[in-house]
Image (cartoon, rainbow, N blue to C red; front, side, top):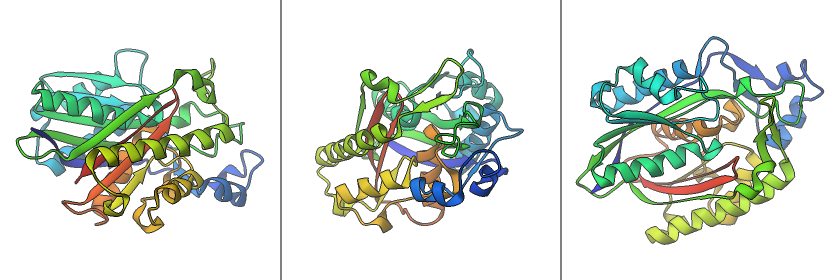
Length: 309
């Protein structure tokens, strides 16, 4: 019994905010942002709601999977920027899509949200409690960014990514996964009482590289796969220096690491599904390839998953 990727989809707002635009808002520069983060621009949702972005990504994933909303048993939506305090954004998305059976819920694990959602969905599929699951990572981080804080406002963007998963009698696409959290480190990355993102960048950098490397090595060892066999690494798009350091630690060449942070910034739970979809569309991944995904986010949460696409 296994979990299969049936289709992927994304949504990115049309509105682009460049580093040069940010120079007009805060004391920063394109050179400063690019050197320290790798980000050149990010997408900002002006008219689109969280649910609307999730809906667009989901419809594309459903089309690519050849399925209809009525075929979905469960909707798992990962976000740290829900549409409302309640009901869940997953339930609102369920209504927008017309998913009539099963249930929907939100999952909050910050930037690790998509991987957490993948882990939960894999368990539901393998247990036989669901046949097809829609997994969505969506964020409207522009709503919780303090645009006067130059250390954080340059980092984040908006967007959505979706994956349709199916239960299969064949070997699973998800070969191994491992999730972690350490609540004692919550104050390294969090939102304050005003709802604004607060981050201790230096501390986060050190913890992120070390923990993501360990999680990656654990899933590779579990699956009996060497780093040389991995066709593509899709890391959470938080900082290009973190990505480069992780690749170096794993001994994986830069050309086998997917990077789109320069175009979108950090989209939290949406970053990995967006990158996965783009890699497939660009031919960076073909059926049978091994893809290693890893993320770290507020909580602190982190994890890794190894897929055979």
